[in-house]
Image (cartoon, rainbow, N blue to C red):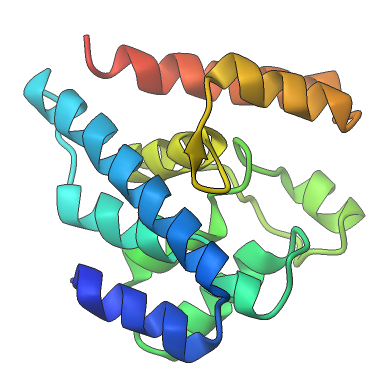
Length: 170
């Protein structure tokens, strides 16, 4: 598994801006905290995978800051031999996932981008709770999405993901 130092070097060498790297570090910190609580509650979760995926989730921002950054990051990670499980986290981290139909409408390769594994869900949720390098609440994220006129379907999907991940530590 790619180490923390290797992941940060990967982001730097790929040309990610320092603020993106700092955001990735904060998301990784929160994701690992969530994963540790889930593990303490008896859930099977791979802490190294969570940290690696969270550190690299925005690797594609070295190429674009649009929604396609998930696909670009996936391609970049795959081309550099990053573990497939980490690449999948990168691909599936946006919001609470994107359907094939939504992907097509957004100009992304027609694919299902929903987080499936526990590790994918934890990273997507942690990313939703970090704005820049500042931690926010799930409610804050939902309000930000409403201000951006995101569809209620997507907002409810993010809310359901938050509820699912929050239950892991109980």
